[in-house]
Every structure is written in C-alpha cells, then in structure tokens.
Image (cartoon, rainbow, N blue to C red; front, top):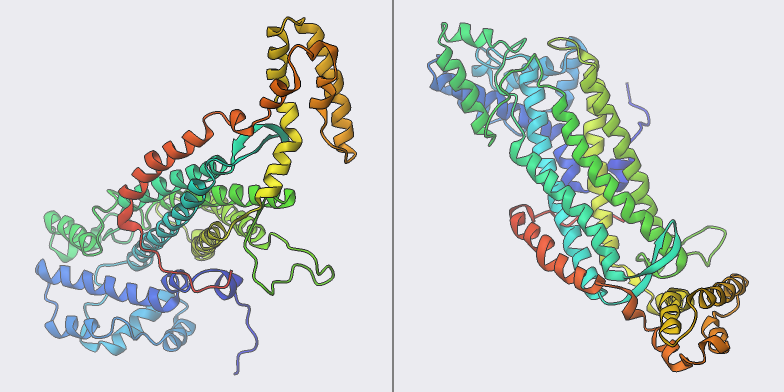
Length: 479
C-alpha cells in the first residue's frame, strides 16, 4: 500500500538547524540504542559473563546501519518499538542474539538514550547561547555611549544608552548559559537498573554478587561520559530530570522572548531595526511594510517552548509508583520539540543580533523630543540657586510642561526651554544656562560605565569559563 501525504513538523522543515535535527532523528537514536547494547554486553563480559567475541564484533560492525523500514515491519508485528529494534539488530548480528539486551528492560535503551541525546542537545544549545552572547556583546560595546530614551510602562522615563539596554538582554542569556552548563555537568545517567529499578535481573546474572552489579552500573555510565548514574530509580529515571531540562530551555525562551519583544517595540519607534533581505516582502497587500518578522518568530517559537515546559511539569507530577506509560507519548513530542524550538530561537537571536540596525538620527530625535522634560528638575534647582521661590518655580514649570506635552502630542515642537526662558522668574538663570542642561550625556548616569564593567567583568568571565562549549555549528537554515 502506497503511503499518502503525511504531516511534517515545521520545526524540522523550516526552523531548527540540521545539527539539532540530526540529534533527534530516528536514525541517530537507533545508533545510540545499539551503542548502549554493545556497552552493556562489553561490561557484562568484562565482569565474567560468557559473551562470545563474535557477538561483540558483529554488534560493533552494525552500529550505524539500522534499516528503519525493517524495524517498522517488526514493530507492526510486535507492537513494541524496542523489541522491533532488538530483532532487527539480531538479524544483523546473529552471534549476539543470546546476549543482546541481557538483563535489561526497555528503559535501559530508551531512558539512557534520551539522556545521552539530551546532553548533546544541551551542549548545542549552550554553544548557540554563547554565540548569541558574543554577538550582543559586540553590539553593546559599539553603542555603549549612545544615549537613548529609557521607558517604564512604555512611557518615556530617564535616559539610558543603547548599549546599556543590550546588557539587560545579555545578562538574561548569561544566566541561561550558566544554568544550562550546570545541568550538563550534573546530568545523571539512568544506568543499569533492571525492570523495576531493583537490579534483580543483573543480580541473578552475577549469581548474587552485588559488587559486580554496582560495577556494571558504573562502567556503562562511564562509557557514555556520565560522572554518575541516579542512585535509585523505578523502571524509568525520575521525570523530574526532564522537568529540569525543559526548565532550562524555558529560561532560554523567556530571555529570547523578552529580547524579541523589546526589538519589536523599538522597531515600532523606528530606533532599532532587525535585519531584512534586499527582496524581503513585508506584506502581500502593503508593499511599503518592513515587519519585524524574525523577532516575531522568536516570540512565537519561545511561546511553544514554554508550553512544553508545562508538559514536563505535569508528566513528572503524575507518574505512578515504579512506572506508568502515560509519560511515553507526551515525552516523544515535548522533549524533542522543546530542543528543536530552542535551537531555532537561538539561531534567530544570533542572526538578528548580528544584523541590528540602529537608526541614530531617530534615536537622537526621540531624545531631543523628551530632553526638556528630563531637564525640568535641574532647571528647578538652577532657579532656586538664582534666588527664586521653589514652589513658584515648580508651578511655572508644571504649567508649561503640561501645555508642551499637549502640543507635542499634536505634532508640535518641544519648546519648553523657550517658554521658560521667557518667564521673568527664570531671567536670572539665563537661556545659556538652561540650554547647557540639555546635554543627553549628563542624563544617562553610569550607563556607559556599566556597559564596560559588565562586558569586561561578568560577560568576559562567563565566556572564558564556558569557552569549552563555544563550538556550535553555523546554522544552515533560512532565517
């Protein structure tokens, strides 16, 4: 029977990088399962079980050539994915039939493989994070001294600098990188725990020798680079580990969504624009539009990651006793999709960060539009020092400021300085002194210094500390 059209996940066809897709591919998973079976057999033989040389040789010769079509045929018969793979591996390595999967339960390959792939995927995510941090760090350094309007409640507040705002994004990503690195270094293996986690099958194989069972667990874990296995388990490792991983990815999503939302607001103001291709179309109906589509995609995919995070929480909370299978289907969806989406989000973040366009004339114009309001407190102090009555001066400034606000809202100029200069109460201050207080650099506080201190301090320290992870592949995806 010829298969008809099938659904394909956009995460695989549009968004995630080839590197992340490969990690979660059925072919790669089959290879990891086979390496687990080989490592188990090698450790069992080293500890005294009579496993033939030919069995190990045949298993080693067929680690990466699983025929997934043949596996699907077996699964259609047995209705069991692990047994389908065992039968197919046995066909290719017949000398290993008697020792393949010896003492193990399905979770030996499914859970341990999930941890191996997840650790590799976390490493790729961390590399992506570091690449994004490098990019935003360069942006922050370039614009560390450029004053811009800071907003609270999306209303003009005091001034900051364009680079200082970028350090806020950077700090969030830095926290994420630290969390992901910590998770990679502490992620435990399930190891060899048997059907309900008691290791009874392995104890039988080794004739009651507890030391050999412990050593088997240690050796197999060490083979795959894990410092330790979970101390105890049911049939599966605790699903809280999945929750930890998706919490880390959820943290990335939170940071990326904040970054993308800020960019969308700034693009609306015309101050900072995301990169756009020469022939990029913003709207099928409105040819003039330049939409922040990449920032919007970051926000959209981040929302998807956060929904998967909740799925992991619910799964961890609803497991029964030593095992229940209601975790299986949801984990097949939630874990890979969270990683694929996080990968896509960070590829976008790096791409956007590297191509950000700061429209400096607009930034300066927006600063100039609000500067007279920013200067009112200093003008008030100047008037008092020149002998004026503080309360009377305050009322004059308030009355003119409100009138100017209405005029600016209607499209008029901000002529607050001229209005105050014409007031008798400010004659003793003088126009020159009033105008001197309109220098934006005097209103950004320590923002330029904070940028340099952050880049040379926390960011540089984190990048140096995590440099061993800074090897993410260039993403060959369309963004």
